[in-house]
Each structure stands twice: as structure tokens, then as C-alpha cells.
Length: 218
Image (cartoon, rainbow, N blue to C red; front, top):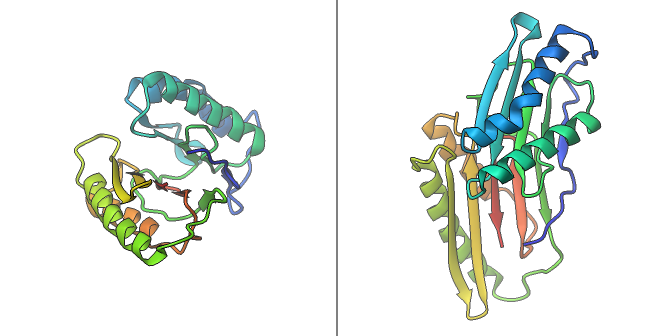
């Protein structure tokens, strides 16, 4: 599947700014410099905090569960560089901009175990489903029920699941789900089901992102 993001990052409108030489900036830059290595060495997911009080920086990196350690590193490095270029001085920012995608989120507040369904984005291509749309949706819903349950109950550290189902002789539907591994078990299910029921244009391919999860169908 080939897709490109309409919005691949979010500079938090409500967050305050920092300047380069502040203690918060130094803490954040210290974490971001080593984050690609840390995510790669820890299997695709890593969280870290550095500092005290208002100067404390919180950083999360999460990569797709089917990637290699080399790709973990390159995805996170791209996301770090891209986000720093796009949103150079805001204390809270999030990116989905690498390809294949990963989540990079940093802030001056604790968010690792919080279920937050904002911001969101989705992308699609221009190949519409042209026939049997009700049947497609029925098959899609059944597939998503399966992969959401699988991801929620997964023993994997990345809370990642995939599935596929034959729709017609020439069409197979594929789905992928993943959620922030720091969330409580009940939040995995709530987060992924919220993704599943969002009203999204009926396109053949889409990739939907929340701050804490992503979902793909094709």
C-alpha cells in the first residue's frame, strides 16, 4: 500500500514554547539524541524522562510491530529530525511522519499511561469501493473485531496485530492495529474500538492515527 500523510505532525496549539538554552531544552535534546538507538535496542518501543519539576521532559517512541531494529532506528531518527524542523520550540509535539510510520511524542507533562484520543489524522488513496459496499463493511467489521481483540490481548510488548480476509476472488482486505503498550488493558480495547468506529470516507485504503494508536485497512 502506498499512502502519504495529509498531516504528519502536530505542534500542540495549547503548549508553551521553550528557548534553546533552557534546562528543559537541554533535557529534551539529550533524550532525542539517543532516542533512535534506545527504540531500536528495546524492540520498537521506548519511554524516558529526564529532569525535575517544570524542566522535566517526557518522550515516547513507538514503531510498527513488524519492522526490524534497523528500520526502528531510521524511522525514529527521521521523526526526530522532522519534528524538530517543523515545530522547533514547542514543549509538546507529536509526529507520525516517518515511512514506514512510527509515533514520536514528547512533552513537559506525564502522558505515557494516559488514553488520549487527540490528535488524529487519516490518509487514503483515490480508489473507491465501487460495488458491494454493505457486504464490504460487514466483512470489514468482522475482521476488525478480530484484530482489535488480538491486539488488546496480545502478550507482545508492542500490542500489535494483523489480519486479512478474502472479500472477492480478486480482493483481499488487510488490517493492522497497534496501541501504546503503556496503556492499561481496558484502554487498549477502548482506544482501538474508537478507531474502528470513526466515520471515515469509504476508500479502498486508509491509515488512521490517534495519538496512542494506529489502524490500517486495504
